[in-house]
Image 1 (tube, rainbow, N blue to C red):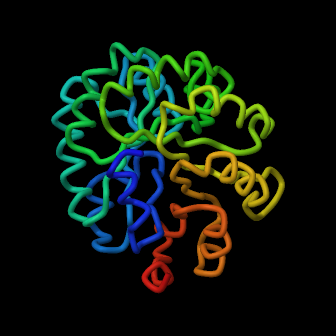
Image 2 (image 1 turned 135 degrees about the vertical axis):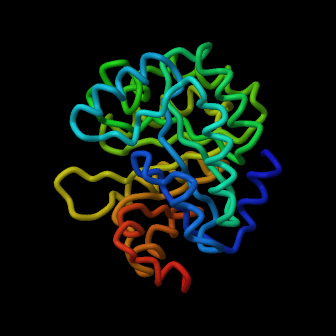
Length: 253
């Protein structure tokens, strides 16, 4: 296991700041000094196809995805440096269709960030219609192609995935297909129709991938819920609770 990943297992802090549709940029992260184990910025589009998708998303009022590709490397270096002022490890959530086009930007991210998180999670139709986001977990061969190239970056690779989009067995089988290419799973324990996280599926996933770092996500807004999810994960991640200013309990965990 990568030494930096091994070091994660020894961190005292057990809460991660999750990516929130580009809201978690460097300026946002640095507000929370000494609070998180990891802060995640993104998601970022790294090629023409995903940038064009972001311009379509912008028509729905979501402008935070539209980071121009020209000048992206300077932009992301600045964001990583700002996020690092939180004194947390910095993870960058990314998405792309053409790994060759994205590769120069991936190299820049790898040089400056601590972790790269591949987005296998987004459910916006402009992204999923490209066969990526949550659709990527249906296509194990494309996922392997991406991860095979990303292995050259010599940086810990996490996958952000969503439960209950495809059957759990299919998810596990496809993750096992690329098992040697990633170091951690950031698991949105999405549970359709339920007001709580799917902890049973998280438990199964964590047992199957007990050699990986597991970050549990979804519906965590209190110390009690965090402790419950930490029974099956190494860390928990928060998003909306932070936007609402609900961070006091994190300091007590």
